Image (spheres, rainbow, N blue to C red):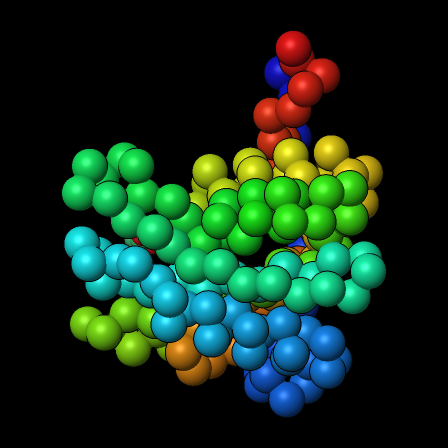
Length: 160
Ligand code: THU
């Protein structure tokens, strides 16, 4: 028997003002995209934005369905949109922000497990880490240097 430990790391910024310009720009696109959120069931708005290696930035939001399991997360919207609009161009950063009319979110919004898996797949597909920048309505901003830090021991194609 051998106990194993998994370590992961991220940087917490007390204020968005401490982030590099490019991260702040990406977060502001995520925030704008959040206005397009179609979330009549949860009322939880999620905006995401991706930065590509060619400098292009694009945004997306969550898209819900009366058949609840069909809700599409903002992260998946934007990563699949990027892959289709800019095929072959590597995504290098992903910003995510959230808003909930029922409670002030005073901490960074966290990607669900499925989105973490999709971020990891995209990293493996392009063989490039994705910087993940997470923001709430107030409070700190978390930055993960890659998706795998959000999902240690992720499932991958080596099993298939
Ligand atoms: N949601 C996202 O867009 N991203 C996540 O990582 C977590 C959840 C959305 C899905 C649904 O529309 C709403 O938030 C509530 O779960």
